[in-house]
Image (cartoon, rainbow, N blue to C red):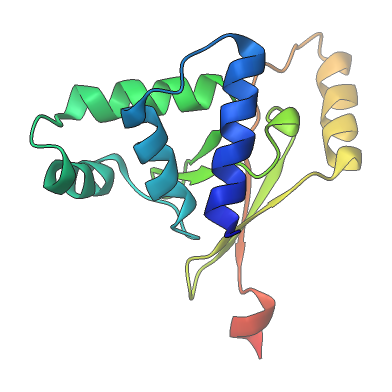
Length: 145
């Protein structure tokens, strides 16, 4: 079973548990994102989808991305305006992204110490964190060598 198959299976289970529909278009958008280790931009998704579904339009892609984001199945890489698949949606709120500036690969981390530290700092200022995006840019171990 490929990584994409595993991610799709997890996504199906999450949608079923949440009582939401994992429609064929949502599934296909998720599959395309899952197959791209560096993520995909909305218009890259549209280009790929429109070759398969003539009726695919920007709103179709954006609605699918919104749904997948709400379900914790994809993350937006702010610095690239792209989306990556989340390998563990149960941690969709507290995560960090390491982005290789050479190969473009994006790795998701779940360093709880970072999340806890930010929560404590925010608390000192009576601030409630609703969403956090921590992106680290550099070179992955393969590109460094």
